[in-house]
Length: 229
View 1 (tube, rainbow, N blue to C red):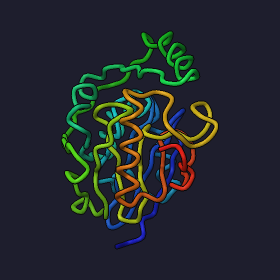
View 2 (view 1 turned 135 degrees about the horizontal axis):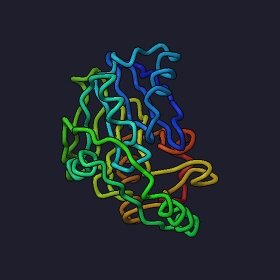
View 3 (view 1 turned 180 degrees about the vertical axis):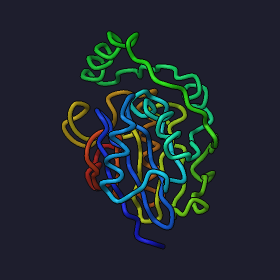
View 4 (view 1 turned 30 degrees about the vertical axis):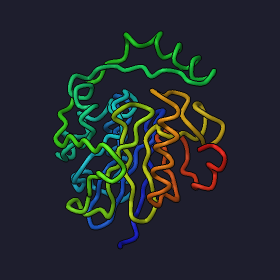
């Protein structure tokens, strides 16, 4: 097993991640109009965007797919997402998640006020995966990455996570850490179903996750989730 190099890139309100082992892949694509910022930051990290062989979409919310079409054009890399998110990505639909905490409900209301002004380009999903249980995973070895895609529903029904053999888990919005979403690591303020979120986190822990990389906020250790799941 190689030691992965991980580059966290802040794009607007979200974080995307470049993972380099024998190959290089990107996790998520940030909100709209962030393509050039991504290119600049990737090159500053020593990565030519054309080296990227795959873009993994953890879920189809605007702040994670807004710049997907542009980044796909720049990198010419295929897009991988869960089959349940495919239509949303390919039709550039705006999905506003349900607030499941008091702050989440406030944030959802604020987002709904600007919904009509949110526009982004659709992008094709080249690889639509549909794992249905923790043992039905999609390996990433052919992209030069020692890891797999795990179905981790809860934030959305089609949310997925990328789990490396090193124990690094890229979870999108399955977990959050930091302003404006949370003060510290924990469950998301938006979710389709909170109990499903917790079960998905337990699945990742049972499969060896030791460090979580959320779409909002800084990475944190599995030990920081004690008592949450």
